[in-house]
Length: 299
Image (tube, rainbow, N blue to C red; front, side, top):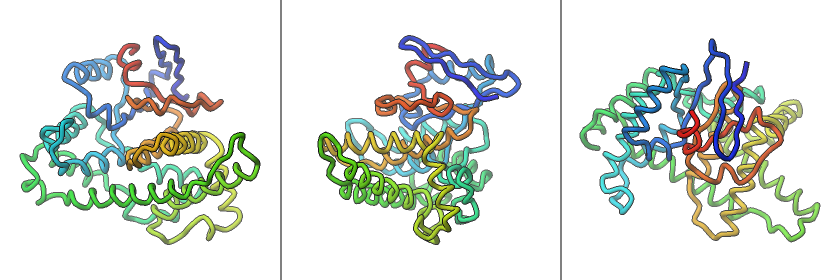
């Protein structure tokens, strides 16, 4: 049985098999903003309803990459601010990290054999790193266990790749023509190929190199379920970024990738980011996204 969400403006009703409670994963913005009362609420909810809170590889990469941020108005002590997220993860989450979105997508498309070994998380190693971060007093102490600069570089590389892709987004007229839509779809396939095949295979294969049967499977994974949700979020977010002239943020990429984890019908995603609610697909089985505010009030 899959978890069923029924949402209204005021509440969100969660229905599920009590013998198979759902996995709930959170956007990094929820981990950032979570206070002591929120943590107590989640702990009580877990005990009462059996929910399993999970953290993701995406959570880990994004949070670690900010540990060495410069001081700012938002974060007076970035190391401690982001370290606190890992303390919350240890206190609330199931020990087994969720797979990366890329791994889930490749599995859905029947292309798992292309995943580079480095993309398959070592659960014990990752848990040890989470614990080390949570208990470290400073970056110098943490450097003995984890190379924070590696994750900073990874985020910066992803941001630059995403910025380049957005800069290549085709001009769309109003109303859009068939040719406009064709070019936009070609652009999206470039994005999907790079981030969902080339990157997780460490450059070993791209969409254009796939056999025809594999290309069909790849396309099918993008036109239904969580893949379709990823497509809608990507196109909506990119258009908004271009329209509003906003800076490209790697977090936008990580946001849309997280949606692929909804491939598992017994998961739902909780976020404080409004951009997840600017569109809707006719597939409530896949669009299991709940605002943190609504989740906090309803459950």
